[in-house]
Length: 215
Image 1 (tube, rainbow, N blue to C red):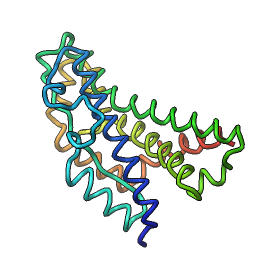
Image 2 (tube, rainbow, N blue to C red):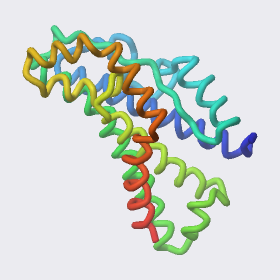
Image 3 (cartoon, rainbow, N blue to C red):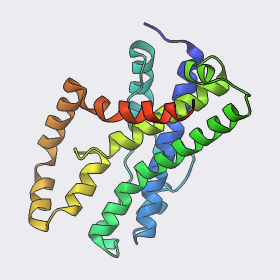
Image 4 (cartoon, one colour):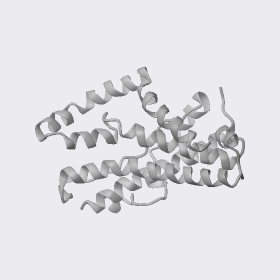
C-alpha cells in the first residue's frame, strides 16, 4: 500500500543522513588507524553525495518504502588498504566497529532530544510514536533507523560490519577460512535473515526497551 509522501520524505532524509554518518565514521576510523584512502576519496565528509550508491541508497529504499512500508538499503562501501594500518587486526576491527557505533551515537542523540521534549511536555509519547507531526516523526524515525542500523550491521554475516569484526577476532587460520567462505556465507546468511526474521528477533526487544524509556 502506498505510504504518506511526507513520511516517505522524512524516512529517506533520515536514512540518508544515518548512512552518511555511518560511512564517514568508517573512513575516519581508517585514517586514525593509519590508512588515508578514505580521505583521498573524499569519504570523510557529511556530504551524502560521495557515499551514495544509486541502487542501494536511492532506488531500493524508496521503492521498498513506497510499496512495503519499510526501508532497506546500503551506501557505497569505504575502501581501505590494510597494508597501511599500524595494527592490521585491531585497525580492521576499529574500522568495522566505527560504523555501528556512529549509529549508536545518532540514536542516543535522537533519544535525548525526544526525552527533553517529553519532559518539557512539548510533545506527547503517542505523538512521537505515531508520526503525528514532522518533529515527532523525525525523532521517532531517527531513533528507529539508527537502532536498526547499529544492531543489523553487527550481525557477523558477510558483508556486514560484524563479519569483519569476527574475522579479525578469530585465530589467523580460522580467520582466513572465514574470509574465503565469505561469498557463500553471505548468501546463506542473508537468506537466513530474510526467511526467518532473525534480525527482527534481535532488534525488536532493543527497540521496545528503548521506546519504553521514553514513557
